[in-house]
Length: 112
Image (tube, one colour):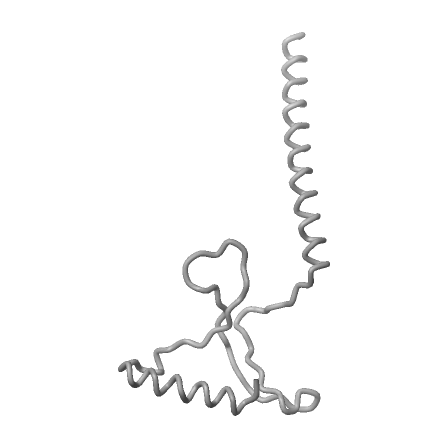
C-alpha cells in the first residue's frame, strides 16, 4: 500500500462517518494482532505515532505501535511450543518429587 492509497481509504471512510453522523475524531486507528484464544473484539495495538522515514527508510511511511510487535516464524514457534511442553513436564516431575519428599518425611516421623 502506498500513501496515496491510504489517503484515499481514509478520505472515503471519513465521508462514510459523516453520512452516518459519526465524528471522525472519535474513530480510533489501531493495528490488529493475531492472538491465541481471543474472544470479543479484534485484539489490537494502539498507534503512538506515524511519520515518513528518511535515509534508509526514504519513501516509507511508518506507523509506530504503542507496544513492540515482532514476527514469529514457524521454526521459532515450534521451539517455543517444545519449551512449553518441557516446562509442563518439569512442573509435573517437580510435583511428583514434592509428594515423594512429603511421603518420606512422614515415614521418618512415624518411625521416630
